[in-house]
Length: 85
Image (cartoon, rainbow, N blue to C red; front, top):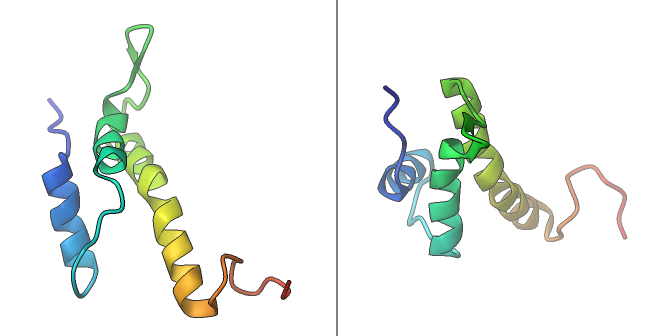
């Protein structure tokens, strides 16, 4: 049986991954990310393997991380290396 991550687990992992305080923009989005690997479609697991479950969480959280990294490093929302506006 797979033990799913909770929002508390995600917060702890974030705390281990970054220095400083972990800020969450929206608690509901974090809860949604934690629940996503449990998704059932017509009674069938949407993410049946542990790897797919991990990817589902990362996919839910990564857009926020990418935006924060690009804004802090380039001062814009554009990906690094893209032409200036």
